[in-house]
Length: 75
Image (cartoon, rainbow, N blue to C red):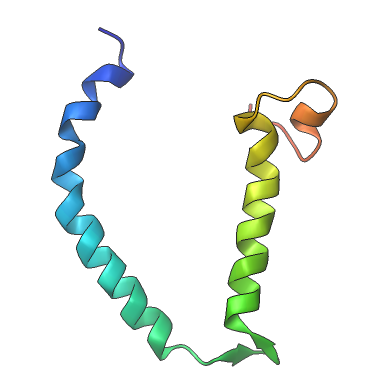
């Protein structure tokens, strides 16, 4: 068996901690101010998510050169 196939059966151990972490993140986000330096927090989070998506997408989509490392390679 491959190394990755052995991890699968044990993922259910993380479900309770992920649920608790989700609540903890919601509480933590509820306590931060609505704006930081005059910019809404939701806009900052949206921009951060867009940057991560744009950085990861070429690798996940297995794009051809030169687009595969246009924003940096994972190696």
